Length: 256
Image (cartoon, rainbow, N blue to C red):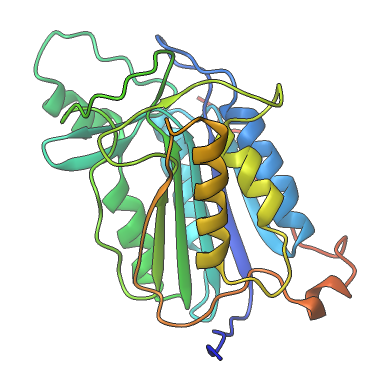
C-alpha cells in the first residue's frame, strides 16, 4: 500500500479571467468561483482573484506566497487565456492588449505572467506538495491540428509537484459549457475532487477520462508529476470536521 504524504495546511490561489480587451471568455470566472467554493468545503484556505490586471495578478501572487509554510500543500489554479512564446509559457492578465506594433515576444515578457515566475516563488517556500492546474488556451473554434504556437509547452515539475493542463500541449480548449456554467475540465474535476482517501493522481486520471469522453475525444487533459507518494486532498477523517470553520483570506481590490 502506498504511503500517504502528510501536510499541515491546504492552501489555494485561484485566478479566473473572463474580461479581455479582445477575445473575452464566458466561463472562467464561474470555474474559478466554483472551484474556490469546493476547495473551501474540503478544508482549503483560499484566495480568489477575478479579472486581474497584470499589477493585481502579481499582487495576488505576492500576498499568497507570504501565507505558505514548509509543511503545506499548495494548489494554484488559473482559468483564462494562456500563450507560449519563445519557449516560455505565459498567463495573460485582463489588460493584455498586444497591438502588433512590435514583436510580441517583447510585449508579452513585460505584459503577462511567466508561469516560471509563479513556480519559482512557490518553490522558494519549500512547501510539502504543489499542484498546478492550468485551465487555459481557450478559444471559440475547434481545431485538432497541433499548431506549435498554440497552447502551452510541456513543463518539467519540481520535486513533489503535479502539473495539469486542461488540454494537451500545443492544443486549445473550446470555450464552451455542457452544464450551462462550467468548462468541461472544471465540471468534471468538481465531480471527483472531494472523494475521500483518493490519490490526486487517480482523481486526475478519472477527470481526464471523463473530459475526453464528454468532448468526444477532442479534449484530453494532460499531466506530468514528480510526486512519489500518495496524496489525498480529503480523508474520511476530514469529513467529520466542521467544514465551515475554515479561514478564507479576503484580498481587497487594488486601487488603480
